[in-house]
Image (tube, rainbow, N blue to C red; front, side, top):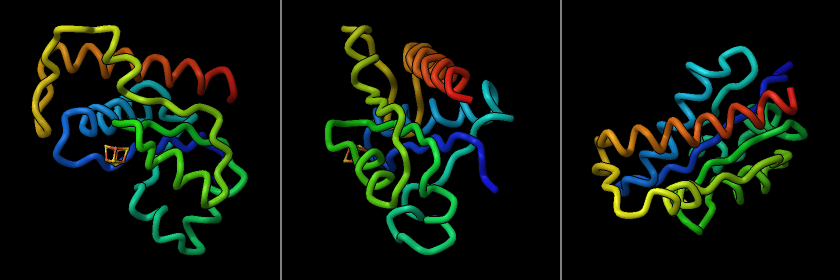
Length: 130
Ligand code: SF4
């Protein structure tokens, strides 16, 4: 049985906001809430195979997307996940106007600040529900 909250980032390759989504999720599941959360690869979810469906369907999920397309939120919902929070990196980025967050492959110090903030928000939600 998988009872941990599934925290799923989009795959936003080639954009710093996609990197920020993935880094915020890793910070959450590895450092902040390792006993209460885990991540699942979005590409695996998109394939919709039986094993991943069993892991997601009916379970609490938090999605973290890097742009308004909301690929993680849409695909986790499609496979039957219960999306309890749809995080969009841009919502937190907006609060840090004028900062440079890094490149698609490397976060700057300001980028690290923002992903820590996002990870903190995700962790608070996980602790509320689990
Ligand atoms: S949400 Fe945006 S950045 Fe993320 S995978 Fe989809 S199109 Fe790419």
